Image (cartoon, rainbow, N blue to C red; front, side, top):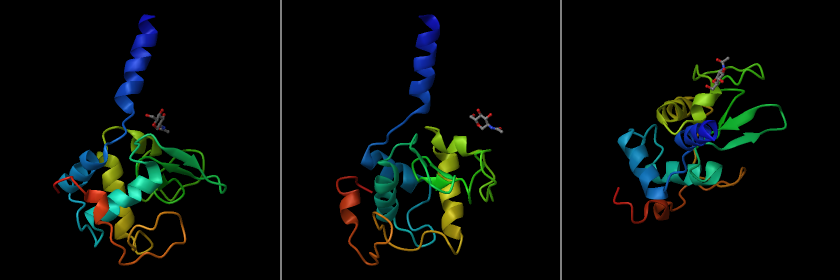
Length: 145
Ligand SMILES: *[C@@H]1O[C@H](CO)[C@@H](O)[C@H](O)[C@H]1NC(C)=O
């Protein structure tokens, strides 16, 4: 019983689903608003569709790579999952991208947008949609940011 309680506490400490405005404020405080031209609304929109603001989101791709965390950062290019041969451009263990401490995830997302191949368009939920110039302001509604 005691060890079960400890396990539950550990699980609770490492899983976090952000509330939309809480996440918007966290992103802003982390210097993400306008970072390499990506607006705050764009980041919120992107993470809404990638993970629904869930730091524990993990999705497996058909090429053997995995997308990790609130930004769904891919293990082939950006982090090492010790399963596939990774470029590991962020220089991290993919597991840290699942932490409720989003520092590493935000730093790696910054690394992704600094890359010419990184994020360049306004939020396009579901791959393939071109949505440059789309009004994303609703993602920040009521957040006071
Ligand atoms: C990566 O991180 C996870 C979770 O902390 C840990 O279990 C694993 O051993 C780490 N992998 C390596 C090779 O360091």
